[in-house]
Image 1: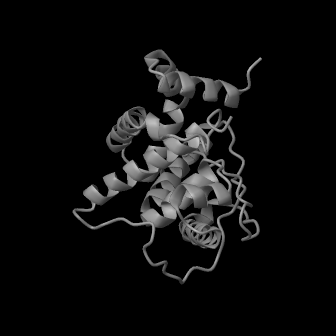
Image 2: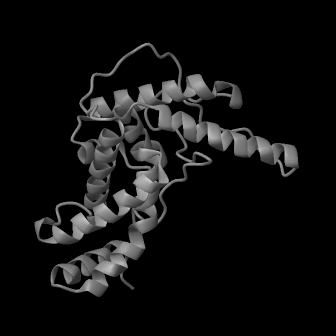
Image 3: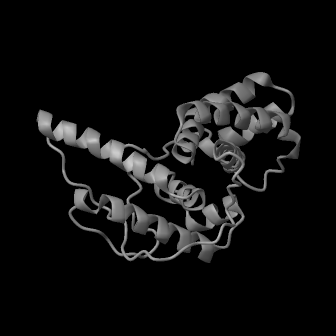
Length: 219
């Protein structure tokens, strides 16, 4: 039985040979992951839908440029991230959003890993819903260069090296921005958590209650 990666490779080869059905299968396989990624970066459903469509359109029209040096999904994520950042640029009225923006300091804590255990009573359900809204708002408030790294590492569970490759950054730059993103989030969310883990890279669970994390996309 073919593995997920083997199946992806076959579908990409068929799509490059002109099979619209094969590409449609790839769309169905990854559209939820790409939409979630776009939503977490842009913070707007309409923008996320636009990013989803543009990412797959660009992937389809540029299939001949895909050399297979990385996973098709990784290549697709890179396209989607670029499209999402373009959306942010437009929304900020011409203020360019760049992953090379200087990183400011002044943070002093980490994003905690464990969330309070939620019960099933109405009050706790309301609190959980409220926390989800707060967490989503906190992530959306991050500067784009922090938010994108945080989403790829802690929500989508890409490794530090993969994130660096996707964004064209060095590994130290990814680690620095991830740490600062966690610090900024902790400052806003501290009272909703019991305790925080080590500041070392990779200690976050990546299971934000409202943001989700990728499932089948990685294969």
